Structure formats: C-alpha cells, structure tokens
Image 1 (cartoon, rainbow, N blue to C red):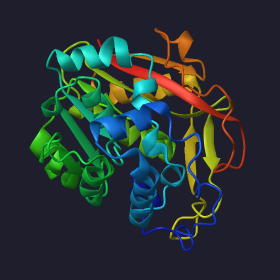
Image 2: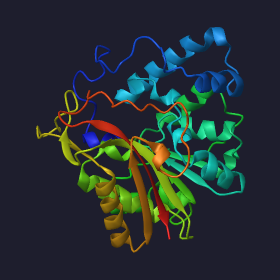
Image 3: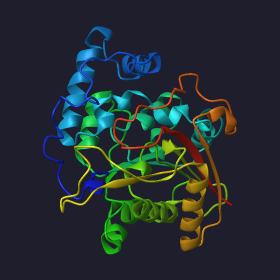
Length: 310
C-alpha cells in the first residue's frame, strides 16, 4: 500500500538501476509459474519471458515496489503457506469466500483458481485501481475472473472514508471467511499495522473458525526498523520506519487488535521454518536468510502466520 509513503514515489525510485530491479528472469520463473502461465493463461512458451518483462515494467510504472522489480508476482506466496493445501483450497471448494488484501497483480487468486477454487468466491483489494486491468492482461483471464471482484481501496484511510469505501460498502463488514495478507503488513510502522489489523478484523466473518493468514518479512529482533533509500524519508523529511515482528511480537499485535475490536483470536506464527507450523510446507520455500536490501539492521526472515476467530 503506497499510503505508507504518504505521497508519490520518491525521486529516483523508478530508476531501473536499483538492485531490486532485476533485468533478467532467472529462478523467479519457477515451474509452477511457467505451468500456470502456459496452461491457465494460454501464453505460448516462446512468448512467455517477453510477456512477463512487459507486464512487470507496466507494474513498475504504477509504483516501483521492490517486489515488482524482483518478479514476486510469479511466486504465488499464498500457495507456499502451510495451510494452503489442507485448509484454504478445501474451504474455497466448499463455498467459503476469500479476500486478498494487498493483492498486487492478483497472482495468489489466479493460483487458487488454477487449483480448483471457484472464481466467484474470490475477491481482491489494493490501493491502485490500475492493477485490475494489468492483472487481466498478465494472466489473460477476463473469461475466468469476473469484474466487480477487485476493490481499489485504502485500508489506512480516515475512518469515515474507509467505512464508506468499496471494501466496507460493497463487500461489507463481517462477510469474508478467509482473508489473506501476504507480504503486506510489514510495509507499515506499528501504529499503522495495528490500525490495519483492526480494519481487517471488521471485514472478517463473525463465524468461529474464520481465518486471516499469510506471510511477511519478520525478524529475530522485533521493533521499528529504518528503511534504506529511496524509501527512507517521508515527504516532511522525517525518517520512515517499518515494524518487523518475531512470533511473540506478532501475537501481541493481533491480541491487541482483538481486544480493541472485541474479537477473540487464536494467533499462530513461526519464523522461517513452516514445517514447525502445522503442516508440511511447499517444497519451493526458500530457507535462506533474506538479503538485507531494504533495512538498516537485523536479519530478515519469512514469518508465516494464521489468526483464527474462536
């Protein structure tokens, strides 16, 4: 969500000289991504890389997220979650609904459809309305993903604006069985994470067992961490921070959000090794410590989590 940046992209952020703008696709084009794009999207193999470069550069022009420069929209992060095969897909096939917040190009929803979930049960939201059209162009699936399922909304808007915005007004409070937030919450400082968490809980179904899940950058040492250039300063010149969690601090965040909203929750989180979570993880999970490209201190590792309504 670009509202973490309280304005347009910083000067120079769209340069293709940043280390997170990859000029050549290598291991980002995984067998899963190749299979989906050739089988589901029907893109000829000989045209595939050119198509991906073109779509990535259009997404970079909308906002130069490091994840866009690194082709993360090919990674299908939700499918790597330990609960994906055993909970998410069976629930969707049984008729439950899913909302993907911070969807970017909707890659996780396409993987759900490819794996048998009904598209009518899937919804997505992001700050940038341009992502809806670009996602259709990337996956060539206007015939599979119906219109009206993408909500361009700012989850950090003032309360009156958020309450009357698309997520609350069109989708509605308490209507979603599964909410996914993959590589999303770590974009914010603690104050905005808490605000976001309470908004997400307002959207979650009131039925016990309704669940929020995802993964994000975590850290052994929890706390506010300063971003590196070009995202390191707000428009007023102040230093910009994001909050990195370990499992214990992540649980405290959601317990606080549950207390604010009156929602009883069971929170589970684990750093780096999803096999310790509940079920076996996808074999393509990267166990290496992530490179510290965006932060000024501490080791960054993947944090897997679920927040279930009890």
